[in-house]
Structures are given as C-alpha cells and as structure tokens.
Image (cartoon, rainbow, N blue to C red):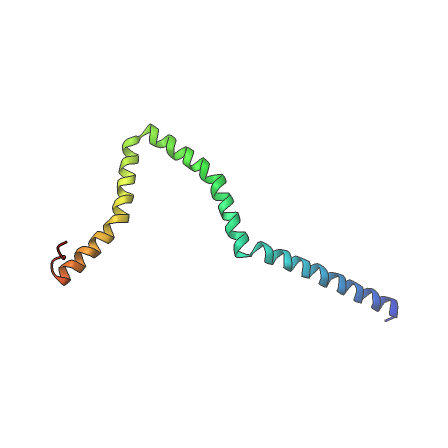
Length: 98
C-alpha cells in the first residue's frame, strides 16, 4: 500500500471519529435529565391545554358524569387513608380525645 493511500485512510478514520464524537455529544445533551424534563413540560403545556379544553367541553355537555368522575377520584384519593387510620385506631384502641 502506498503512503498516499495510507494517509487518506488515516484522515478518513480521523474525520469519522470526530463526527462520531460530535454525534455522541449531541445524543448525550438530548438525553440529559434536565433536557428530557423540559421537553416533557413543554409538551404537557402545549397538549395539556387542548386536553383541558376538551374536558371542560365534555363537562359542560354532561355535568353529572363530571361530578361522578370527580367523586370517584376523590374516593380513591381519600379512601385508603381513612381505611388505614381506622385500622390503626381499631388495633390501638379508640382514638385519643382532644
């Protein structure tokens, strides 16, 4: 193999390594947790507004369904805490009087 061909191959390898390094750096920046969180926040704000508009329109058309949905969510959020407190009080005896 002559020297010119070897130098050309070495130059090509060097160029490709630099391109690969730049690509890896760009991927690392895109995959950074801060960047991912910011992207999710932007999407949530952008698409969340449309979702909120659709949900409010549905609530205006059928308010009873909305009340039932919110009541169910409230029951899910509040239910286990109340059950845990009742179970603890029944195991410990009556709750202390204030």
